[in-house]
Length: 173
Image (cartoon, rainbow, N blue to C red; front, side, top):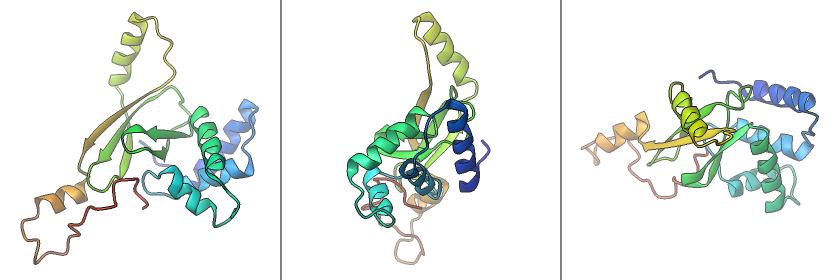
């Protein structure tokens, strides 16, 4: 997977919106910009908190409407298992199948393309005469940093953060 910079994400989104004849409003763009600055997934309410820094009057419907638009355009994915959202780094291919690798300890989400799996899903959809638009697979485990912490047996003498409380809603970066 190629990872786009936040600037590339915004430029690509603006270009695609123009091509599609849809409006990337100031609020929609700001929500996408905030998400692009994240190193992982983020919840709608964490986005709202960040959005209020520039738009103090922002309310939950503001964020949810922006998220709905961004989902419709394929610019972001919803991570169902932890009720968060993550930027799609290859939204130029809206019909791709994504695998969301969700860390059960810190909630960081890494998106990978599911090449090979796409063909199987397409075949299954075809057999069911189902018009597939996109698919997202979520897989849970531990990221490399959390796997190291979980394997640590020297809790009293290490530099690891063994606390996990409050980290599961969406990785803030």
